[in-house]
Image 1 (spheres, helix red, strand yellow):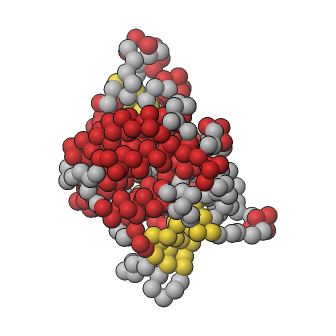
Image 2 (cartoon, rainbow, N blue to C red; image 1 turned 60 degrees about the vertical axis):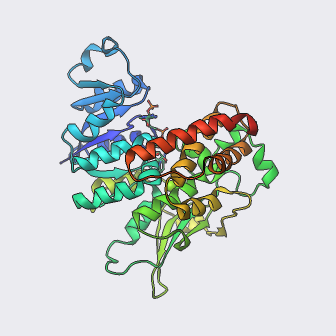
Image 3 (tube, protein in one colour; image 1 turned 135 degrees about the vertical axis):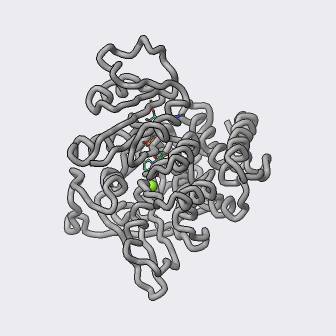
Length: 383
Ligand code: NDP
Ligand code: MG
């Protein structure tokens, strides 16, 4: 029996993690869960999983908590994340909140010596060097949940002491894979939210359409696997069957395949190094017929170019890209800017702000705040 705390239990990843707990009650017990503002779903989850602690980062008065759920210790505000990540006893902490909010939680969990299962990519994008240092210090591997990084992690099992010479990071290409630049620039909210293969939260779905998701994943891979950006190749693979691959010195390429189903990588992180049933459909290669591959296009998707530029720039460049992108996606989802405005806002913010230091968590949060301030200032210019 292993105990788990789930930060962001009401999200796409969080709810699938809870499905796996329900599928394997003899194996996992939930000790803490948090949501942002979806209290109704959180209440239902507390009722079903009976954690010791629950919390909402957007506080509600304690009187609103139903009588039958008062057995549980309730914490409100940002404190909920800290208590769930580091104070309530748990063998592992799944960080599946969205956005830079995940960075502090990952650091809190690591400082408490907890095994981290990482869905939140923004923690590595913004604070990769600090997170990986802290993980090394407690001597526990960071267990990736993001499907591409889980795939690479799986491909590397048993590979040591060999280091890969290249990572092949696959991408579905999103809903605008075949669209020209002008058409992409005027895409609607509904078109951008219509991902061909994966059902995910709104932020990451928009990021998949702009390929900022892949940009963030290049940064995530850089830290998780200690690989320079020039050795991380984006491979557009519209079927999303190969979840990523690694190439070794001898020319051997090892890939991980499966139907696109996040329960598989979530389960791998939860049960590592074991594998448990997930309810996922088996891969039928005959029904699939063929797999195709194309290079990522940095002209139609400038996010791919910006990833390498920001990684090479170092400092807080990736944090600034991430903060400006979070602001831009929120503005797009709010119908304030067109789809093409997302990339223009991110590039404009990077240019106007320049670089900043990222030596400490405080530096990173300051750079993030500056990026959002500058992005808000530039917003009218990308309408
Ligand atoms: P969702 O938007 O579906 O869920 C986000 C979760 O975090 C919810 O529980 C939400 O609560 C909570 N939350 C939202 N804002 C905050 C905040 N400011 N502070 C604390 N908690 C907050 O996101 P996903 O599950 O899609 O993604 C979660 C993370 O995992 C992201 O970093 C994403 O990039 C990554 N990821 C997701 C994949 C997927 O398939 N979905 C695949 C790979 C990575 P509430 O419901 O109350 O709003
Ligand atoms: Mg991914």
